[in-house]
Image (cartoon, rainbow, N blue to C red; front, top):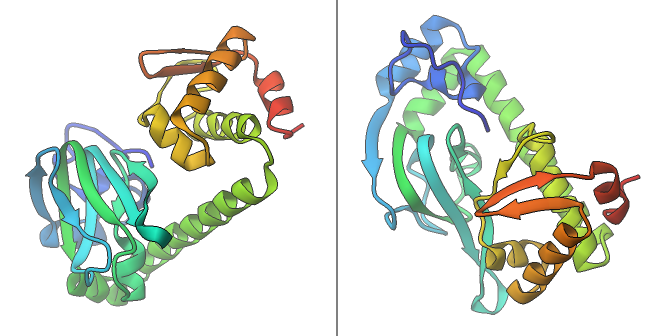
Length: 234
């Protein structure tokens, strides 16, 4: 997600700075802001744990948060790394089911918290808020479906890696400039079902073949057409 308007007139802790809420009427924004509890969290702190009853919604203004879940066999799976502009815990809050992941701060964060009851009351009162929340949930569902298809349709580690890098580049609008990669190569391996060593070898191969450039967590797609061919997207 992207941070919304950042004009000096917008308070540091305002839902107006979160893109999903940036188009709401002033009255709705003011009511949301009045319920918002700002806080700062240090790296390593846990915002909420998997299977906890949801207490409310977190808005990430600055920093990064790693979302992980314990799956079959007791293994810990990396789901994603949330960054500025993201909403955390939305599905659990609206669905009234336990948090499906553990949210741990990986880089010092500035957050806003809206209690579940306050959010529910405001959604009932303001249809505009209910609509944007519904749209955000629909986008989350679509992304989950894309992830499922990504894992089921692709056949090789190289194909999955190419598709993942293309998706990151497209989502961040960075086709012609460098993208900051938030994940370690071990974490990328978790996401594509490969070892860290395999990811390192494949990244080196893609760079050697002139498909990408990668240095100090900065990635640039050099040959988008070639990458799409590798990913079987063309």
